[in-house]
Amino acid sequence: MLRPAPTSKYARDLNRLRKRHIDLKPLDEVMQLILDDTVESIEELKRRHNMHTLSGEWKGSDECHVANAGDWLLIWCTTDDLAIFQRTGSHDDLFG
Image (tube, rainbow, N blue to C red; front, side, top):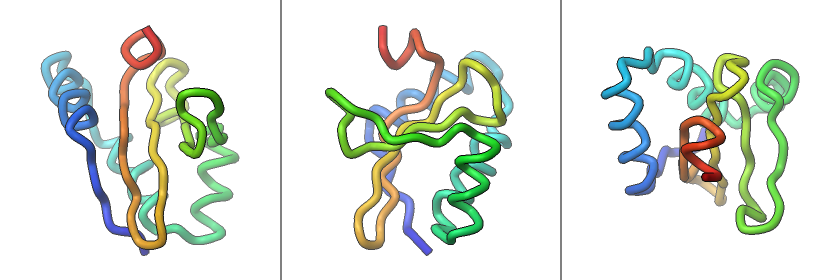
């Protein structure tokens, strides 16, 4: 099991979602799948949340859709024992 390590940008993203009165429960569920770090949880992320590896500026990070909402993304990377949550929000929020 991985330990969560949110970045300061991720914390700002969460505050923005809270101000928009977005229910964060789906995000918590996706984060738990990431933290579980099992074959089953990764398969569920790929199958239900379109998990994929990013390239370019975000090379080395993964992205998925939260709750299969078309425009709510979560970006993170992992180390041996950490899941570093980097950003969350819409495509416009994250990629401008």
